[in-house]
Each structure stands twice: as structure tokens, then as C-alpha cells.
Length: 249
Image (cartoon, rainbow, N blue to C red; front, side):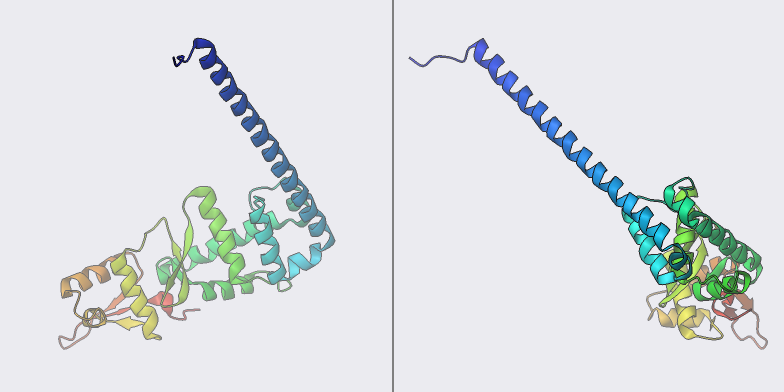
């Protein structure tokens, strides 16, 4: 006759399960401790490397980019971690903070001209004129600095691409919808002087857009200052200029 499962057997199985869970938790804790120790060691080695190559990192933008990527991989924030070993050694937190402030200042100063949108290469040229000549910066530095501001405050300037050209856009001012983005792409692709018409937008969309849809997208960009309108004589349709893709410096 087959015996049933007794209370003692149930208790024994429960104790066995609890023992296995405890062993699993202990192994997981040991693994996490080892990973933390490994990360701490890597951070220390990174700090030693920074101290040894300080002048090169600050002066060489390519080396600075690689070093920054290593820091990001280890969770070292060079913009907000002002008290970290790396910040004290290199001052890169201050470097990117000052760069972000200067970039935002340039965007604000030119807002009346371009409506808060500026090509990234134009911003780089403006920053190179106002920063010390011995300090070499790249577009990558600007993208990183503005990205950290966006991460910290949830608003600020973001980088978008229109027809392959990177443009700095004020995120708090507008998030370009698909229609306005399509018009900006068209304006960027036509080259200087970046002028489009309602009919040109419709034609570019190969008949998929109505005249009203194209007009609404242009009206939004006009209202936000991204476009300027030129009324023409003789009943000719107006043309729209896009200062963000024009050299106004």
C-alpha cells in the first residue's frame, strides 16, 4: 500500500527550499560584492590614468571623448560629480558645465534671428570665437554638455538632424512634429538661401499632402520664429525663409 505524504515530509521539503533560497541569496550577494569591487578598482585605475594624462585629456578632443566614454561606462558623471576624484583631478565637470552655459548663451543671443534653432556647426564656430584659443572643442563636446543639461533638468536644448545636418533645437520651446520636421528637412535640403513655398512643400511630399496641411505646418514654424515670410507683389504666393539654415553671422 502506497504511503501518503506526511507532515514531516512537507516540513523537510520546505526547509530544503528555504536553504536553497538562502544559498542563492548568499551567492548573489557575493557576486554583487565582487562586481562592486571590480568597478571600484576600474574607477581607481581611471583616476590614476587621468592624473597621468591630465594635460593631454584637456587639450586633445579625441582623447577626451574616449575618456568620457569610459567614464560613462563606469557610471562616472563628469558634469554633476563635482566632488569626485576625476572632477578634482581634471576639472572636466567644470569644463562641460561652462561649455553648456556658453552654448545656451549663444542660442539665447541668436534666438531673435533663428527662433531658437541653430546648426551645430554654426554653434561650434561661435563658441570657438568666445572661448580661449588654446582650448580645442568639438561638436561631440557640445552634444555631451547639452545632453547632460537635458538629463539633469529634463529640458533644454537637444540635437536633431535635418537632411543630414545636425541642428540644436530648444526642447522646452517645441518638439517638432512630423509635419514641421518634414518642412525643416526640405528647407535644409534646398541649400542657400533655404526658401520654400506652400506649393514646394506639397510637391516635395509627392501629392500626399494637401495645400492646407502644408500651410498649417508652415504657419506653426512661422509662429514659433523658425521661418520668416516674404509677401510678394502681383498676386505671387509668399515664400518662407528659414534663418537657421542661413549664415547670419
